[in-house]
Length: 85
Image (cartoon, rainbow, N blue to C red; front, side, top):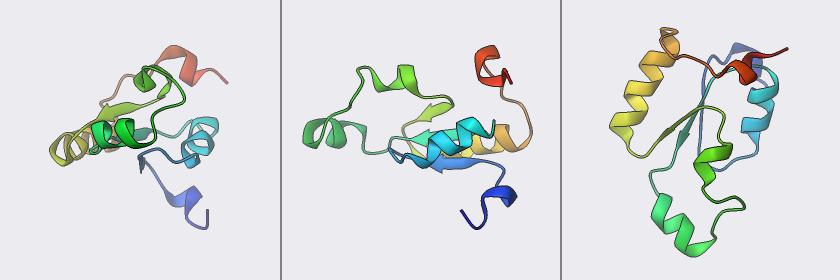
């Protein structure tokens, strides 16, 4: 939280800090590189989990790097409901 105001994009997995970024209207990339392992061990509160993610959902480091570049260059089209204030 010390660097929250200086952060342009959050890269997260299953952390609740994404809620803070949603409320601040900051972009989020959900990196689910261990999607199947997590589903098999703990499972998800929502199925499919992707439906409740307010941001890009990626499954590999290469997808993450591509999404990060697009987010930092404002090339991502945001859902209209996400942008409502």
